[in-house]
Length: 284
Image (cartoon, rainbow, N blue to C red; front, side):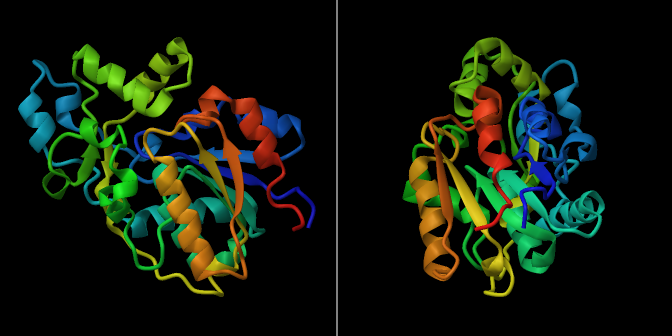
């Protein structure tokens, strides 16, 4: 098939469709249709916790308040993305580019409706094996030195969320947040992006599992875009995802595209990223 399938971009936790705004113009200029969508519990689908805007600042509430998106599950996220893909593609298959924690959502959609996804692209994203929750990969040695885990506040089992403290005036915390996500992004743009983050990623998305089959997810062409300087999803973990997928489905190996980037190449190298995704969805 020609490289005309629409590209659908899905952001990761705490971000929104806004994070693709520097990539999409390059994609469209090259003649590809492209749309960015908000994931369940994010963007226009989010609900902000009270502590975020409450004054005076209450660090206790940051750690204990139950998230207003605590009820969002992997099922919910996949249902929303499926509806978005159907609407955008008009019934025709699309290329889905998923970043970070959007990976498990793409995996579920590609497993349940492989006819809707002509190519699944994982941009430094969680790509869990069959029946494995994405959260399990945060507890293994390949994730031991990620810089996001130390930034999380509260117990996800109680709050229902992986929570960032976006209300704090702790300069060190905010600097570490920028380094975790935007290590190679210029300071002005990194500050702007930090200001657009939402505090809660629904932990239910990370807890859900998907049983993978050869005629489901295993039948969909996939590409993994690795990020060599990623401090959120470390290169060793990215390599583990690829190895597990190829071991499970050796007849459909993962294409790998290396990027010398941090966790957010859509901001640090949008032109180069666009050049890669433009070529997804064509003939093998």
